[in-house]
Amino acid sequence: MTDLSRRQLLSGAASGAAVLLGSSVVNAKESPLGVCKIPAKWDETYDLVVVGSGGAGLASAVMARQQGVKRVLVLEKMGYIGGNTAISGGGFNSYDPSRQEAQKIKDSPENHFKNTYEGGDGRAFPELVKTMTKNSYAAVQWLESMGMKFKPEIYQIYGGLYPRCHAPFGSLGSDYIKVLKAQCDKLGIEIRRNARVIRIVREQPLEGEVLGIVYEDRQKAEHSVRATMSVVVAAGGFAANPKMRALHDPRMLNLTTTNHAGATGDLLPLLADIGADMTGLDFIQCNPGCPPGRKHRVIMHLIVKNFIMVGLDGKRFVAEDARRDVIRDAVLSLPKQTAFSIIDQNGFDETNPGHQAGILKGFETGDAWKADTFEELAKKMGVDAKVLRKTIDDFNAGVDAQKDALGKAPNMLRKLEKAPFYAAYAGMSVHHTMGGVIINSDTQVIDRRGQVIPHLHAVGEVTGGIHGTNRLGGNAICDIFTFGRLTGIAVAKGK
Image (cartoon, rainbow, N blue to C red; front, side, top):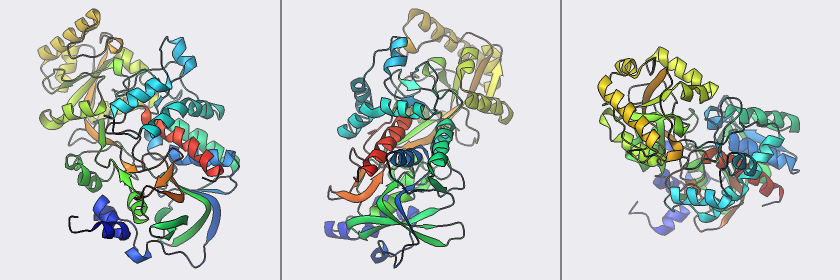
């Protein structure tokens, strides 16, 4: 990279992608001069083409159609829709005057901004954070207007730092996809699966409007689609791409991931090819998941007040309401990078049905255990029973005193006392990539000269600058639906 001049970096689009993202992830087959080759004849024409069928993509498509955009096409490279949204826990951070007031929780968009901005070490773009936190409740109401149901109680999600999280009433993030898919059917929005975008077509490599895309079908045949109003890229991050992760944080190479198989960052080099600027690609988040050598992820950690974590020695090592990056680094520093999450029956009862099923499956795979006493649980976990018993007794005493030895906040303290008791492995899995393409508050993509790339938007985990160094739990769902809704509005206004 030191041999490249600034002029070469700006003019050599393909070289820029390789420098920024690594040659292992480049998907397009074109030479640098062919990056923006305009088809002699477009195969199809739509007003809006959305790349990706997760929550961000479907929200953008639905809102644009509701705002009057007539011809909308969604392209999905996988054989299924939903992306990471469909397999997420679904927690949605937003201030909520109705629900929070009923629970005597004081909150505001300004407080949500403060938590988000400071929780990302001040490395997010303030205007994007303000846009998200100011418009999040409108996104909650919009989803509810289409049939989305949330549980009445607000809670503090793992790594969320404040009780403002909304839980889907049903099971997981798939609830959102069901609601939005029904809207797509109702509004006549076509979703085309097994359609991998291999090129974003711009008038010139670093100048002019984005005109459309080229995609490959399952048989590798190429198809060109003209987008007269905009292309929206909502293709997700790169948490399922080990080489790309390790390029920016070498610790991430051999870790497992919580993401679906399609989260490989394919669109990032294509965006770099046409001049899009990037930020924060080394900000990579992990969540409790499979330790090295394990395959089944058991989730007991989402509701902070319900769980504690212990190491292989049976001792707690971190406050469970800490930032996600703090807990990540604490687990990665443990012997064998392995910990356990522990809950009691109260915690199990409050776990959503989808994650309860995962716990039950963990009994079969040897990744989770259940017992009527902590001594029996310790034996199944393979830890010292006396040490674990003391850990539990000390923790419960701290709950009574409302003073936790590791600093867990009093409102997040709840005794582990109702049998049976549950434990599961909790290593670290790559969960979210906070970096990506730079956008403005209208989700228009910004180039390396700080200018808007006309007729190109991006939304969701493919973007950067919203979460800074560390994403708060519950803010990803907030991000995709708040900005997805705003993207639809912006496209309809001709932005």
